[in-house]
Length: 148
Image (cartoon, rainbow, N blue to C red; front, side):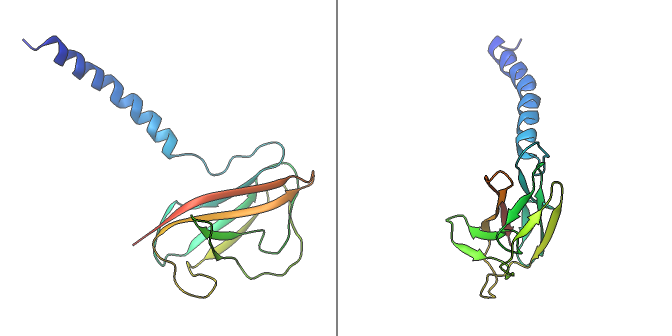
């Protein structure tokens, strides 16, 4: 016969394994794009992990129901290191740009800094910031990982 404690431990493991697996799967697969009422901005990439040198398609989407205004033609796009140091901002005209509800703009980033150097592997923060019709500042950021 097996000890009662061993049977209890195995039974608990069999039940807890799938439950925690489902919970962790849901946490790891959070959606980047959710449309809501009001002011909302989303940044979407095709994945979170990229190889060094791989081009990255970045979509800035007005995921709300109000127009968003940006101070330049790059729609407020900035790529920073996690410590907040700006490494890339597209060169763009200093003209106000508007993104209507559910509209999107696409940028392709070749993983170069503003000075033309290739970035190193690590975590980077992609941000965008605009102003809604109501005067609220709407900002969104996502983190991407560059790997060898």
